[in-house]
Length: 356
Ligand code: QUE
Image 1 (spheres, rainbow, N blue to C red):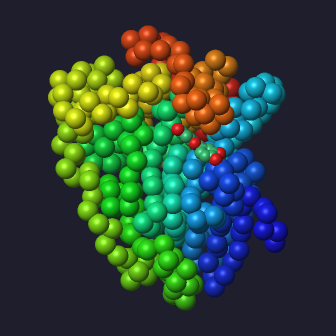
Image 2: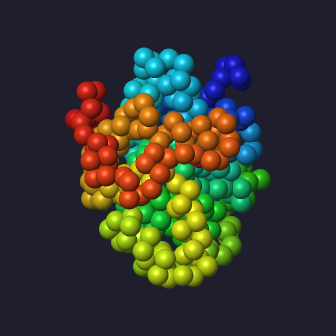
């Protein structure tokens, strides 16, 4: 096994161990990494010698910062006829669904940044463990995208309007808040993760109760994550972010005129107006849908975001390429985003992603 590969696969003590290995890019997910997972995971799921999958990030800073959106940007610029923008989202969402439906424990060790595409590799599995270095966000509206990788599934299932709040603002959560939200199941100190994996390798995880057995092993390493901050703002979040339209959310935040509400208005003012309206419509359409239906909707949305001139390219340029942090959104205001522009993100595409 070469250790300069972007993703590493090992089998140890009956555990399938995946290491995302692009530490300089915070382990951002490439199509090659996705394809390697799709090559290995069906075999691991069928292999009676593998009792669970453990996934982690190399380098000590990140689990996974997201999808390789810079790669998508470069293709649009240098190779407009390329197929990466078509294939990347399709194959990524197929992996997200494979994790959601995986018939063995899927245990994510979240020892650092877990954002966007990283969340899609962790939150749909059976167990997510966060350390003191854990940092969660769905930050896509900052780059003109929407919270994909099944954001339409798990965000809709968070309490109250928390999902809409996280999706629109990209608000970051540490372990205590992620526990409170139900996004992770335990806090374990970073220095204990090696022992946790060893204990998982020693454990008998066979049979029906595998999930509970993994719960017990993780619980034996779990420590207090400290105080959560979300409980104190939960009522305010629900009051403002449960409104049906972006304009109403903004109106409610303005009417509050608290430090917290004004801060949220400042945050929203930086995000793509199109992406925010599309995201609210995503959450509305995905509510109470199956995982598979959600991914079909999100695939259509992803392809709309890849069309030339979409805010996505301007967002990636401003945040990751030129790093000027000054995207020029088009349209520049929420009022300029028409219903027709939003609707265009939900229309069927030529190569629709449909699960039987
Ligand atoms: C929104 C995003 C992403 C982002 C920043 C945003 C995202 C993503 C990255 C990222 C970060 C560091 C890297 C890298 C990519 O940043 O999805 O290659 O080294 O992958 O505001 O959605």
